[in-house]
Image (cartoon, rainbow, N blue to C red; front, side, top):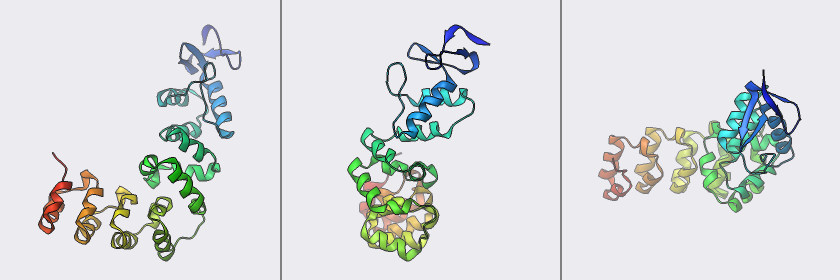
Length: 233
């Protein structure tokens, strides 16, 4: 079944009702939109709506993703990219698709930190640590420690499975502020207790949901100033 008397403005073909996508008073076929999106993205451009060149929203892209056949993971990648400022999007688009995918991959759990960095920060880091975005790189504890010694933010480009408890303790011991570049899933109770015993001010970088009653009580016992970092209920 097709949408009555309506042709897709990209292909000029009838629009199947199950693939009809309504955007800004214009009806499209999801498959034709998908093709235009993939084409733009593969040419290092953020796709825009064909008839008015405005930006897609997350909701629009998800609608296209669910209605198009076949599905394309490129749409999911673009949704992640849209979380970044425009300047940062341009920088990330300049990366090879493989390296860009690593940056945008949620399994590293550091995308929130990258989003909050300014574009000059990211550009500098990508230039300096571009080689770390290769899946086949061999990273030992000694290499990671040397990288950390050169720049705390180098930890953003180290895969989580390479950041051991030994590395985290080394990081805390040398610069407690660097813990903010460690993924939340790596902050176990043991690591948090170690960090707080080493430097009470590390508490400000601990996620609120990780602050158990015991951790708060031990922190305050060690140093009364810890109260300023205890979240309100």
